[in-house]
Length: 91
Image 1 (cartoon, rainbow, N blue to C red):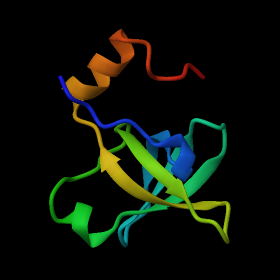
Image 2 (image 1 turned 120 degrees about the vertical axis):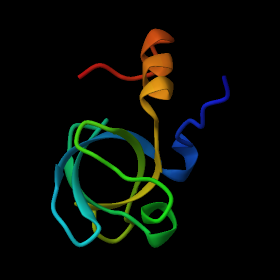
Image 3 (image 1 turned 90 degrees about the horizontal axis):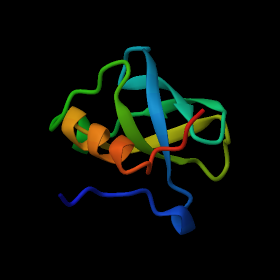
């Protein structure tokens, strides 16, 4: 199975969607332990719905550390594959 992984050299990381805030915004808990406000771009908003508990790839903003862009949402099958392979950091 081919699953996209976050590119660490670009600053991307895994996160879990915590709370839907409305207006294409969502609160995410990132792998580095910080809670950020994620912005869902229109490119993703039109293709896939993001729900609470979903595993996503985010890229924190360079100029505002408490906000991030959501780049990809994993399906349940993909997230269970990553957890079986121990590619998801525990925490």
